[in-house]
Image (cartoon, rainbow, N blue to C red; front, top):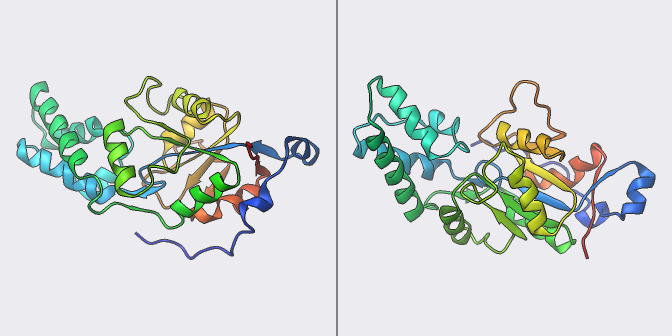
Amino acid sequence: MAIPPAPPPHRGIEADITTRTETTETGFRTVDTVLFDLDGTLVDTLDDIVRAVNTALRDHGLPTLSRAEVRDRVGEGGTALVDASVRKSGRAVGPAVVARAQEAYLTGYAASPAEDSRPYPGAAALLERLRAAGVRTALCTNKAGGVTGELLKALHLDGCFDAVVTGDGPAGRKPSPEPLHHALKLAGGTAGLMVGDSRHDLAAARAASMPAAWVSFGYGRPGPAQAPDLELSRLDALESTARTVRIQFHAIR
């Protein structure tokens, strides 16, 4: 995947921290928590998902999916991938076969979620900078909790968040705003910024009345009439780009 050249070095998040009083006076919106999507935002997981789902599909007599077909459906869950294969087959497939293929995919993926997955450039450093500056971080993903935990552990990102909310939790899945509200509350924050790559991330942020940052290097694209508050070509541009749209980070001490 081609990654655009790095932007000029940012000033450091400490230079972008302000108090709520200062924010009111200067007209900046403050956020004290940054919520991140996982797949296609913090971590490039596509190759492992393609491998796991196609192994399950082949084992159940279903057509495999191309990398592009999987990419278009990442974030919608394993059911969407199996359903896409069923439609591609052009034949009637019983619900029992679909269920078994779905379970095989999830089991196989959970057993080895990080063979080829890697954090995007700047991901770990951004999370470290935010937390060191007193800004809360939360993960808000539609991925299941078990595989999310294994993936974060394998990539040494498991200690990088104040809250982790997954798609099989009580708050449900994006594009509902409830996972974002839940993540913000668990992180101990009061005002969030959602960072993601898909239309579900943007829709959830809008429904939650949060500003949204769209990462252009991910798997998804904004839907019609969806306009993110800011666009990022690299994660290390978050602080500087946020300032251009008058969003400023507030430390929770």
